[in-house]
Length: 499
Image 1 (cartoon, rainbow, N blue to C red):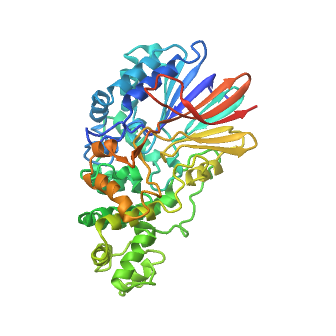
Image 2 (image 1 turned 45 degrees about the vertical axis):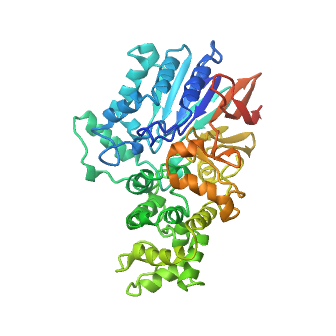
Image 3 (image 1 turned 180 degrees about the vertical axis):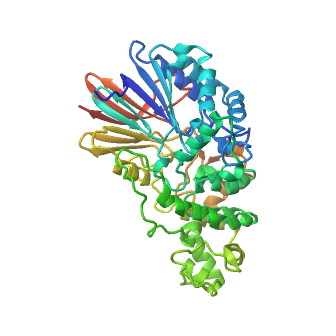
C-alpha cells in the first residue's frame, strides 16, 4: 500500500501562462482550452479522472507587480487574471470541472506562478473554483512544495513535475517560499530587497519585459537560451542598454548551477561542489555566426570571444576562463559589444544581421522533435526511482514522448502559448527571410498571429496534452494534440502501451 491516489485516467497540460494585459498575453487558444477542460470532465463519468495542471498555470512575471514576486499584491494580481475577459472562460471551465463527481484537479507549481505556494493564494483559487461548495473544494489539490505529484493509473506509477527543478536559470527556492508563506500567515510581509530572484526571473523582469513592449513575441523564442542576445541586438541595436544588466544575471545563473533545488526521488542531501560551474561565454550569448561576423568586421578574426574580451581587460589578473562575462573592468561588456556591433552592422543589412543571429539560435535545432532527449529529459530521468513508470514534465514548452526502456516512458506536455518555427527555407538567404523580418520588426502579436510565409502561418497550431489511461487491463500513455474548438477527442501524436 503506497497511499498514492488511483485514477482510471489522467490528463496533463502545462505552461498555459495566463497573465499580462492585452497585447502582452502569449496564451492564444483560450476557448479551445476551456472546451478541452469540459471534454475531460465528461470522460469516464463513473470512474475517477484527474486533470493535472503541471506548472506555469498563471504568469505573474507578465503582470505589473512591484518586485520579482507578488506578496502583498498576490491576491489582487490573481483576481485580475481570473477576471480578465481573455481568461475568464478557462476559470469557469475549471470551476465546472471541480463541481463534477469523481473529478480531481491538481495544480503543480512552476517558475512563473510561484505565488501558488502561498496559503492565501491556494484559498483564493479553491474558493473561486468551488464557490464555497465543500464537495467541490475537496476535488482540488495543490502541489506547491517542489515535490511534484504522484498517482497511479492501473498498476503504473505516474510522476508529474514541472521540470524547472533541474533548470539552473529557473529553479524555485522552496524553503524561501515557505518562509514567505509563514510570514503571510503571521500577518507579516516581505520587503522587496529581501527576495533574491533566480536568473530566469531577472532576465524576464529586467530585460525581456522591456523588450516585449516593442517586440511582444521575443519570449516565444525562449530568450534564456544561447544566442538570444545576438538575436536581440541584430534586431534592434538600440536595445544595447539591456546588455549592462547581464553580468549579474549571469552570475545568478552560475549560482543556480549548484544551488538548484532538484527535489526528485533520488536526490542527494549535499550541495554539489561549485568548481565546475562556469558562466556562459560570449560565444554562447551572441552565437558563433554573429560573433564571427563581428570579429571579421573588426579585424579580430581568429580570436575567441574570451580572447577579445581579454584584450580589452588587460588590467584584470583573474582568468576570463572562469569569469568571462562577470567583469568590473573599465570598458566592460557593453562597450565591447557596442564597438564590435557597430562595425558589424555597417557591413550587412539589418535583415541579414537578424537572419544570421536566428541561424545561430537554431543551429542543430531539435526543438520540435518529440523524441529528442533534451536536457530536461536527461536531468529529470537521472533523478527518478526505478519504480516510476511514466514521468511527465512541462517547462520547456516542447512536447516530448520517449520510450525509456524496460516499460518506462517520458512525456513533456508542451504548452498552450504561441509557438513560432523558423524553417531552414525561411532562413536560407536574405531574400527569403525578408517577409519574416517585416513581421518581426512590426513587433505586435497581432501581426504574428496574422502572418503567413509562403502561404503557411508563421505560428504553429500546437496545443498539447498528455493522457494516461487504463484500457483492457493495460496502461496507455499518449502525447496528444488538442485540435479544433477542443470539444472532440485530441489527435494522438505518440502512444505507448505498458502491459
